[in-house]
Length: 365
Ligand code: AMP
Ligand code: MG
Image (cartoon, rainbow, N blue to C red; front, side, top):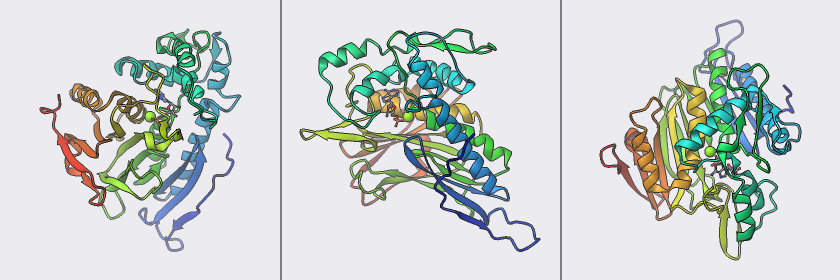
């Protein structure tokens, strides 16, 4: 573990009197962490709030060290550079490769970490943006196949080795922050943190409630006003939940008056053009946290690719399963669609200009 010291806001509020017991609601630590290509804000409460916040930072930095596609020594970079040969990797990457394969299968390939060569061709890995030719995309699309990622030894082997297909590479950008949020839940438990608000750049984890007992308020950014971070489509009131948003407004470039964003449809090689402007996926953080955090992140990307109709079908199909989740969809034609479980927890921003519809289990089809 290394700490390149986070850019610390240093709002450490230990307001207990000398020698007296610390009021957990007044003991608060807030740190800003620049990692995984984004600015993160970690706010923890409780007697051990500083230690918990820094332990959460350590989780993020350790994961970045082994899962970043741009750090040469990471497990992911070694795997990407191995030319199809088997590589020994750590348990974090193996867990994510297993889960990614499952998520790709159930989203019918809308989520696929082997889309990496295509994302690179658009310049999203290096920030040297360009529109690739159809010929180039056709060649690269042959490499996009999650089923070619191979875990040689199975989940319980002592000598973990995995391989990609020849020419393939992977990018965990659509899943790694959700996984990090899931791991951070373990820290919050270990340090007996009563309440926390962890924002990993579009991946939010709210733990407990606010100090006054009301739910945390999670703003959903207005995708039509990307330059104004305070412009909201609406607000979700949540406790003990993950809320993860994917949207074309989060990363894009423009060429000849056309906007190209970073979420790629693996079927076409082009930025997804599904009629959705953003997708927020929310699920409980109290149980199955590692899975639910990872799932929310992967689903937000996949459902953005799928579009409104398929996303709502997917939501309906998952209502009876073990890991329920809820959605807020913002469409390109200025509608906000909220699934039943969030209906009384979502408030539309009255200045947004959107209309709001609630979809119930029975009416989603
Ligand atoms: P997110 O912001 O979580 O939706 O993830 C977007 C990032 O994941 C992009 O910057 C790419 O690195 C990668 N990516 C883009 N499209 C896909 C996709 N269809 N499946 C998996 N990863 C993707
Ligand atoms: Mg994602």
